[in-house]
Length: 318
Image 1 (cartoon, one colour):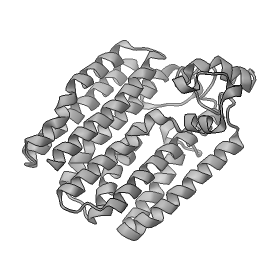
Image 2 (cartoon, one colour):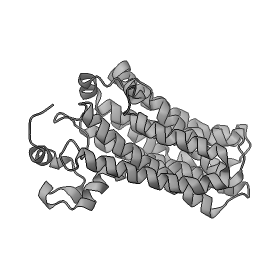
Image 3 (cartoon, helix red, strand yellow):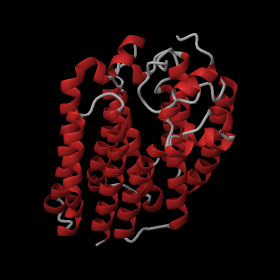
Image 4 (tube, helix red, strand yellow):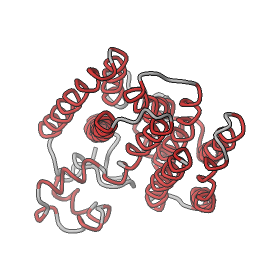
């Protein structure tokens, strides 16, 4: 751990701030710091599965506005909770140091203290529970089980005695909870049922959201390895992690073909293929970029996830 003062850390890392935060720590308002802690660039990943799940419900004539909005709020809250928890636990475990090449973490930069992040997590959990109560009323006990598991997973990803994000299981966690569970849960609270095609439609969303994590972990291989954080990227190395990213893109863009031909959803669900040129650029970038340059690849992958999901949603509706 560095013995630099919090103020020094914040000033040294000021260049990592998004444009609106590129100023000395002393001039940052509290709301700007909390916005920074929520990592706005990751939030499109929370909305993508809700769009697809809602489009599936609409196509089946089962759309319901209030549950759809509640699902969106819940997804955003879980993403923010995960971001707060990662910020806190990664700092506590010595992963976030001055050597970090990713965007600023508020606790490592001395912008928020442990007590403030504890309070922030408590507020987000409380809001998620309130949102979840309504969804449980609508969807019954399965939603209660899924909601409780999602909150625990967000905390135990980097927290607790056996954080699975530190044991090569983070990719699987993201695919299951931020992909499959989010799409299927959004559909379920509106339709009250699930079918195989819902899981198939959820898979590409999960693949692309997992690809965001892959870029994050690729960028941090060296610092994570030194801190004892054994992500899958640390375990398999740079070359295999880049191949994993490429595989996730291939799997994601194969899904519309399966939906169109195997499930007879028609040619409209092939609309996500329009974003293939962007996917090729992302794949090229992940092979050429290193260090801080991967921050822009991460943000671009999040945008690709949202664009793919929007096109898939439109295709489902058509």
